[in-house]
Length: 225
Image 1 (cartoon, one colour):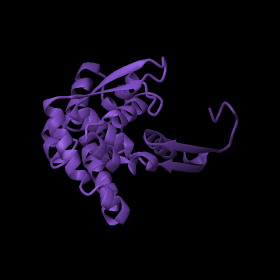
Image 2 (image 1 turned 45 degrees about the horizontal axis):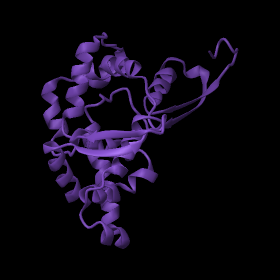
Image 3 (image 1 turned 180 degrees about the vertical axis):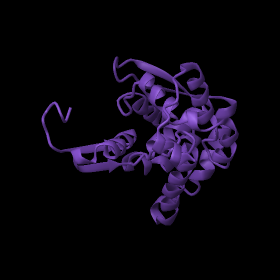
């Protein structure tokens, strides 16, 4: 694109996986880049989703720690971590039901919330300050029997909030990340996290079905070894 437009240099901006693309472009064609903005850096040596559970736990601990240090937040939500444990235990026995309005049709939409679904909603909510700061409130409402706020978040992240082509996602992550760790690493990587290992194992299984070859790059091999 740069050559077709006859540009001597251009500016790169990438977020998440886009930062890895930008870094790779910088490695290959540094002469063609004037500036690069990397938001939420995803380095070539990362192996998604192996670190997701630990990273998410760290992010959640930060949010809940900030709540504990704020007098108003702590008074309203004394033990959000405890609320989360209660919910995960309850949902493992019986998924919760909540009805929301379908954003496309406007019709009522029944959602079933599993412990894995709750964990995913919390993980995605940690992406934004506007949703991460509300996590203690959402957990307390759910413990009290109101799952609608969490269901609405699930609908948001599953729709307009996270637009992603699943085929492209698997083609990229299966070739560049999942191929570079084995099942023996999963336990230690996800131990003592509220997400556990479901995301890693489910993506491993998906990649086994997707069957794309691993992309082995010299610099990536060096990083991993």
